[in-house]
Image (cartoon, rainbow, N blue to C red):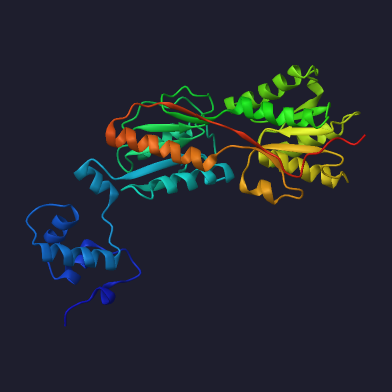
Length: 342
């Protein structure tokens, strides 16, 4: 009795032999069809491809890349799958939906040990074998020369690489601080981001410039370490709120630190925004779900992902020149900020 795809389908990986048996042809014929070679009748080609679809057969990416020099896979390299990276991945997926490319998301800094230079190690594993190009999210070092085109998003050292997508962190931080000044706040604290990030440095600079432009002194006591991690942010927020004259407003360098600040304040019985106003940066999905909803500076994360992959595909397919794309950062006013109490 003739074998059918449904009888051949099983829990294990489908092989080229399974496809040949189901289609009633040789393994060599299947190989010709899936690799686009000549010498196969149209009807046979159609039958083989129908079986390929039915069985879900996928040839090895490594073997395909060796034969074709292309895998049609874009690698997205992130340190870890946290909210910032996940929003960028949404944009990458949208941008690739109308192309011939698939996406491989790879977290390179989740194992134990030092993670400095994780992107270089990840690129050496994937570049030229599994992927045709890479979008590297917040690389910690200047990216090395590799065999595949690369676009960096929000690199730690700023736009040093030729192909870079980032946000106007300086202007965004100024707007956040100016918003608090406009509400009447004068003791405005800043919860810093990570010291190794150029974007965090620019956000602190924007905070300082806004205060100075308004004729307000920059008080070192009102600047605390946040580190972009909940434990560090909680410690920094507590230190600010423990000051003899605590701030009436806190601008945190990212949303996760701002949300942690809100938790610390609420745990001390402070009412938001009556007793304390809080502003974040990024506008991750969690920002709108806090109580009250968080006022923040929106980075267009999905749009940044789309722009990065659009540039990368043009570099791969058309030989486009790498470029630096800077996107706007916009203040989103919600319920976590208000005028200070008299």
